[in-house]
Length: 90
Image (cartoon, rainbow, N blue to C red; front, side, top):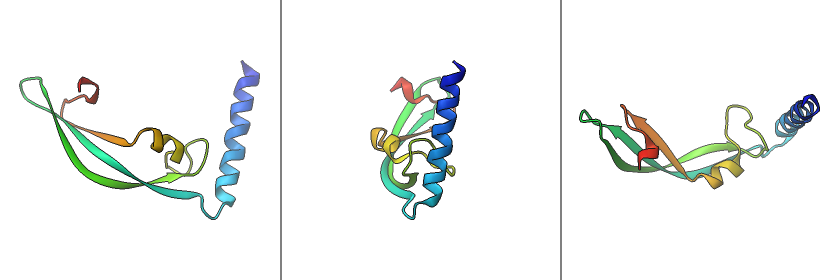
């Protein structure tokens, strides 16, 4: 178990160093936004929002406060919960 933790920590350190040395370390992706709005009657209303352009890191792990671009490609939608709504109710 300790070896696994060490390997993951070393991979993150190398990933962080590579990201900081690259000139094109950040990318951008368009994502569709959906709103989950909690209503007073304990129901959830879903609304489609506009497409947003989000910044991503070209890395294996999240770096510099941005999600990896590979993760954002696999999750092209962005859920915003307003009130008591839950996106998994959809």
